[in-house]
Amino acid sequence: MDALKLIAQDCLRADKPVVAVGDTVKVYCKIKEGDNYRTQIFEGAVIAKQHGGISESFTVRRVAHGCGIERVFPIHSPLIEKVEVVRHGRVRRAKLYYLRDRVGKAAKVKQVR
Image (tube, rainbow, N blue to C red; front, side, top):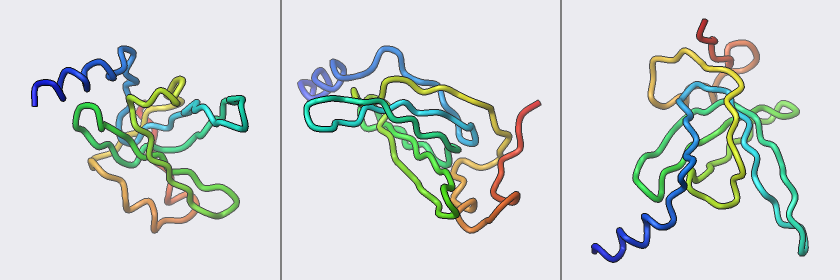
């Protein structure tokens, strides 16, 4: 068991991004196309965080062309270049799954002043 913990500590990211639920973030992730890599930006609201060491992740939701898209990003993945916080949201829940049912302005998260 200790050997697994040592292997997991080697894979942990030193510059761990600090994101909170309700924040609007830009995630720069690498996409492999053939032999080359390109950077794709996914911008949306953080609706959930999963804790747990090496398997820590966060879920980002955006609405594109009237269709809701959610992606789960592992925090310690080498395919994530950086995470920028665009704005901080004011929420009172740990999981914002209720945003899935809302449309338009009701699906927005209020900004911290």
